[in-house]
Length: 467
Ligand code: GLU
Image 1 (cartoon, helix red, strand yellow):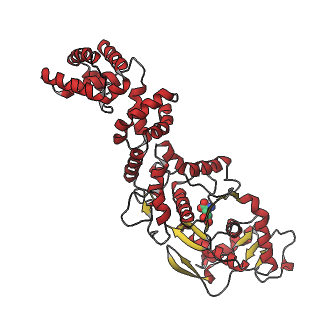
Image 2 (cartoon, rainbow, N blue to C red; image 1 turned 120 degrees about the vertical axis):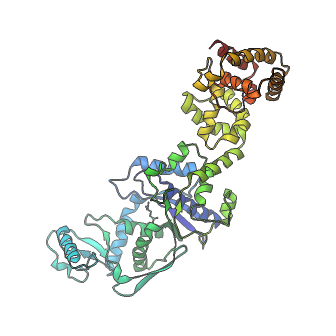
């Protein structure tokens, strides 16, 4: 049987990082089995669904590289079909009209509470003659849940779980305005889309027992289930805004690479031995439902940073320069031009080993994009004292005469000078750093000099002498 899975987010806000993890699992499962990964926008909550949130879903998925097959299914397009299924169940006597008013239901619940009973619809219209319905009452349609027996779901993650059918109440399929409920829409769409495996958050487990009853009432095949544990914040609480970055877009904006995110998210509740670094190709051959763990995973930003650093280092310099460019734009207010991009690519071997994110890269790269005269921060000013300036002036003359202006040649020149003048290398390299970058920290400074070129290097030193 060909695998067909789905990712059905509700467009009511950002694309949550936990949802993205579930999407990733579905995507990998489909890719591993040569199946289909479908996207469904569950926009039936019209008050809370927004076009911006739909956009956030597409953008987030595209950024993460989780390509779906075919066109996305828009759930509201299928409402008539969902309602038709409810009517079919009515015709078969597997559903019924319930004419309870909200007041009546309220009174019923209040009574159950006082008696210490479970609060649930008591099925009072299940066998009642609709002729007894109050005039102009608008009924809802409820499913007839089995009164006896039990429902068992064999879940790939949670194992076999059984509930007593007496626990399941006759839930609503169609509201009094004729609109289908979420529970019905999900089941009908899953069937119509040919979903074979439902891989979703374990917060949906209670829905599963109810959904299975609708599926069985229609005589449809029950899909296989895998309910995946939640992602928690580093403190073990539900992952939320409080933890800083709940949305997929937060990670994009903070300079994480999609490949690092995929690797990181994959390891939240799924494992392959002790492997931490797992490429897409490996993930697509290894991912399975059996190795999804039962306990929730805590989000670990330190681990994410180290994975991101790993993937940054793997990226070819030109591509990494392109990817970093928008982050530089944020800092300097314009996109680097082609020459600057080439410079950035040349600088990457010096920048990459020290960066965890694209923001780190952009920040460290600023020294190549600064325009003269530079502003000097306090640390720089400290290094540009009389002593420092004196050395720089002498070194500048020597640098002017170097046959090849390379990092190695400049470094050698500085070493010889330090020895001859009995000063520490730092005592002359730090003033150089201050003059070339305006700061006290930068990428390896002789490399910066080479990349800036002789002319710019000497001009910056001359500016510093005058500052
Ligand atoms: N729309 C639901 C959600 O965003 C997903 C439902 C499901 O996976 O069945 O939580």
